Image (cartoon, rainbow, N blue to C red; front, side, top):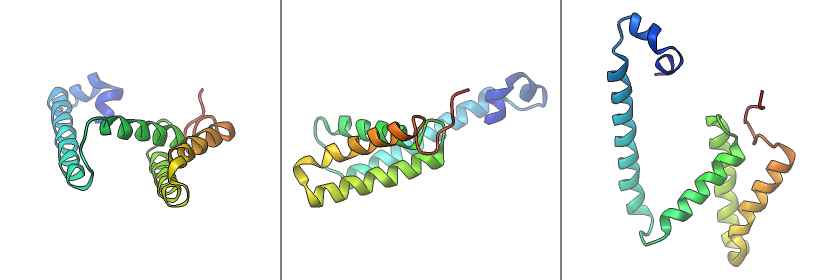
Length: 120
């Protein structure tokens, strides 16, 4: 897939059906997202507005971890998840603020995120 993004014509010249590979990868990603939604719906309460909370937390995780870094995103998810849980135990009223304080602190020290690439 990476070769198809970088040099689509060369990959097609090697005899690989690039549109078929792209469609297959997209279908696999959509299936995994659907499976994750089904599994997540059994573990989390579903109500109106819950999606915005998940989207906001995922944005914070990506910002803390660093754009373009899967390892950084995993590290950011671990850091934000632990902070959110500890915040709910220690001061439940202000637990959401703790994640944004962590995000601001990380961005103040490392503007590209924990493991993000520096802009060129």
